[in-house]
Image (cartoon, rainbow, N blue to C red):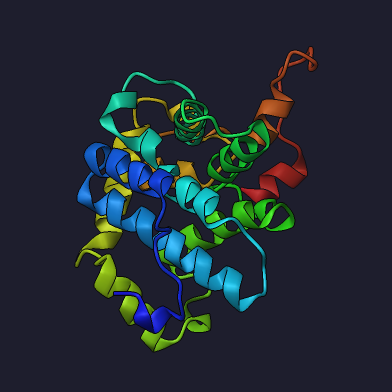
Length: 226
């Protein structure tokens, strides 16, 4: 299946098989295939750039990264990334992994929707974010050969209407906790799906904070901005 990817494939280990089974039983086909592709895009990127990474940790992080979007977290009010990261932590702790390894996976999952930071951290953390970016918005698309893209999609097909499908999955996983999207691009999803969603504006939050005793009055600059 992976002969065209120059030795890159799903890790053949007990922990990888357990991860696969757990995520396969928990996530939809769309999220499962997406997560597996995130691993492969990340691993290909790491090999291309000469990065040294632990395939098992990268695979675990990639497979868990969207778990927080699933139905089991429909009552959660924290960021879905943290739900995902905490689940990965519990999974690895129950199997005796070292805290250093668990921290790598936790950070990789928790930060995957926070561009601008993961690329300066450990390879596993950077590569989950890179793989997710490639699979969702095609970031770095042309850095992968046509042969690589075809091989990944043959192994884990991309649904015909993946764009709407992944947006729907994001929305279903976050619509009950809109406040958790502040400071990330996740609020774009809620704004796209719900015309009544109101974003938190950090400038207005500053102007209307308790530090300002008088009611906020928009300045000339603010008027021009709007």
